[in-house]
Length: 534
Ligand code: FAD
Image (cartoon, rainbow, N blue to C red; front, side, top):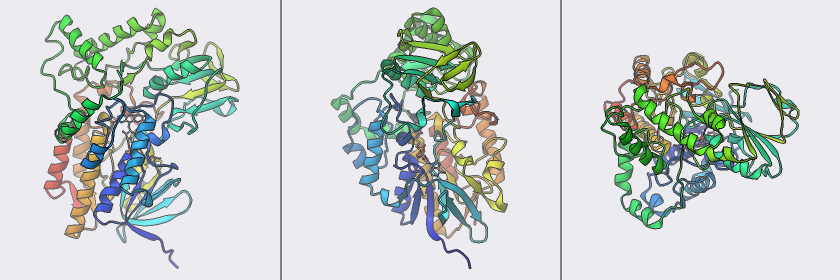
């Protein structure tokens, strides 16, 4: 006898900002939706990353949903850059305000999603053995949700406590009086190190790659400024949608090499003082495409580091010199570099003395052993593809997504994959995604998918599937766009370089969120050009 399983119009995997909005949109069309979330609360990134100093580096009033004018008017942000607790409160408010929780099943990890060619539906199975069937399967699994523990042997022998920034204990961690080792100096390390240093008796930071960071200049939000932006929200949001990175800023008109050093320094200083991810990057037209132009920005930031860090050797070790400025996601910091002036903080450059082993009492590098009471791994994520390839996703002919993507991800517009009908990925590889204010990209994808589903239902189509030709052409375009820039020259997580054995492919689309949105809209306007409808 065949097993009877519950049927839905759509299953959404993940209940972060993407999954919750997807649920809201599909429910608005009258679809039955089931959302599965591995965590025991909604919020995704902002549910998991509770490390000290966790904060958004896009301004709060821009890193928020724009789909509901009432929501955007009623919510009051307190700081320029919101903390993790504040963003989580916001997401929880959204879940309650739009009554989303009743369709979200928490603490439930999806293990597999298998397309059944006979009935054109997906069977989604959870780790606990639950199986449901749905016409549409939407992966809202996040680009930075599969944390990566360090590839150093011996973790199981360590007798102290250890933490990954991406899975921080809800009750927080008190490092008072402890000897702490932090491994990793990417965004999470840069945010957490100053605060851990204030508590710990001694902190040792193990750095493989120094990163560019600029002062966030965080501050409480002035109510008058907030009211002013709220009055102009529709135009501001539209400008974000049409911009390059999802943040509306005036575009540069000059090359960095057209102006003299004094003028360049004034422009970079203004960007530095602004405390924004994109100000220095967008000071000149060619920062991200021309190495000589980029060097001028990189050297400006390195000189700032040299000014801030008293010990010249430590300062030099903290200066990024193996990748052009901006080709790894730049960071915003609060007192990061000055933290290395504290007497209780040391820096270990693991390029010079590689980490060899985690021991019962600490860490061993090639030249000595360090004793710790606690270890913190700020070692990042298997970005963009990790959450997708860790689910057993099988499309036509039982082909596994993981195998399809063995040489690097291939998707049409980062939204659909040839051979995987009715499967959508939100902010998938091949879309601007992590190269943008992700709220803008998430809303665009969710709305596009929602309109696509409505179209299919109105026209009586049962499936939509990217064609191989359209996918090949898009993948090529994404690569070509990447190759026009300096991005592929960095060993970044954009390139998969932080995960051993991961193919080196520049995964996001650098064409800009405005250009990309136009492309997606054109595809839809032409009856979903590049997709086969059945
Ligand atoms: P997520 O928030 O990652 O949610 C995905 C959810 O899917 C997770 O809760 C996960 O548990 C769940 N999931 C995954 N696989 C499964 C499975 N198999 N079964 C069930 N559930 C599953 N973006 C910006 O634009 N600006 C920033 O400043 C910024 N700062 C960031 C700081 C940190 C520390 C991190 C980690 C990310 C940051 N990001 C930032 C990116 C951030 O991930 C996105 O902005 C956004 O939160 C992504 O939302 P999402 O819903 O797409 O994915």
